[in-house]
Amino acid sequence: MTTKLLICDDSNMARKQVARSLPDGWDVEISFAADGVEGIEAIKAGKGDVLLLDLNMPKMDGYQVLEAILAQDLPTLTIVISGDIQPEAHQRVTSLGALGFIQKPVNKDILTEVLSSYGLFSHENPATSNELDTSHNSSINIPATPPPAVINTPEKPRVTQVNVSNVESEPQVTEPNLTLSTDIRDCYQEIANVAMGRAGDLLARLLNVFVELPIPNVNFIEVSELRMALKDIENHESTSGICQGFISAGISGEALLILNDSSFKDVASLMNYQYDADMGTELELLMDLANVLIGACLKGISEQLDIQFSQGHPEVLGQHRKISDLIANNANKWKKTLAIEISYSIEDYPIKCDLLLLFTEKSMQTLNNKLAYLID
Image 1 (cartoon, rainbow, N blue to C red):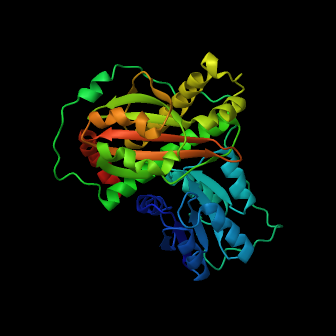
Image 2 (cartoon, rainbow, N blue to C red):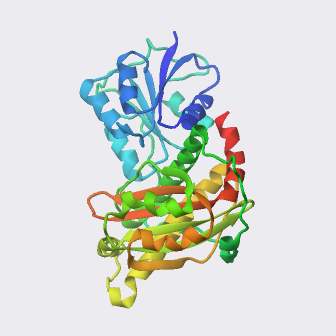
Image 3 (cartoon, helix red, strand yellow):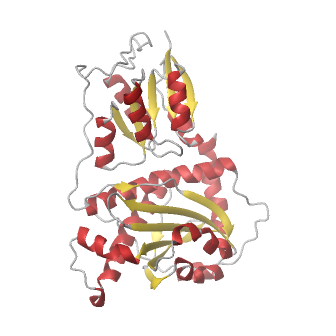
């Protein structure tokens, strides 16, 4: 009989990628859920013998879905497919009953191997819904998926230093019909989600903490409106920031790393720095965080889109100022920007770090062309 498979992910692109990556010859009836609430309803409706679950979703995230499955003893077998690759994330989902953990973007061979290892799929005799044991009996012998290798001291992303000072003088290109459609926005958000997870993993290993990852915010806006868009993260605190330019074929932009000043002492403690504001500790911390987060995010994007970024030397935007003041100079550089906003938080610490990736309007046409094939 047919296995009922539920793919639960807030990204339409990710749902399609997972569906295309299913093993050939697997007799399945596929259903989709765009968030955890829809996912739980679908399982209760009998549409989820097997659940392929994302973690980072609105309304009800993957962790909450796993908790609900346990609490309500729902009949499903879960494999997590996520861009959050922190070792702690892997441990948490397996402790909540997930069978396996696969990192995004999903690979067909890996997904087939994981499904086969749990007896959910076989080339000779694919598992049927009647054969799946969906009870939560702790006596069941389920093979463990090995966690990611632990790196005590993460290698900082390698940076190719080039002069990108000409980015700001880039000629204006008028694109009157250039818009951010729903499908393209979803693609940008999913690409950023995977890249954000790579950077979050490095930060988690560097600080030995659990990094809480948000849903990336993607907007195509007038640069002059950027300060208004950042009101939600300003929070009336003074901040310090680093700016780093980047370029590729047909693509250019700037990455801004902004750290709340109240976070410096906690970050210094976690990184085993001897904190002394007068001795330049804050600037050193900013540079180290920028190297890790900006480098890893751009690397994650470049790998997914098969491009290569070169990065310029980081520059200090300012220290102990409002976010709106830090980014004020960028309003004079381009008319519009594709802005990707990621707000990192650290569990159990009042640390807040915001990463903004600002792509020029001219870059968006090149990026859109690269993303188009992912939608179909």
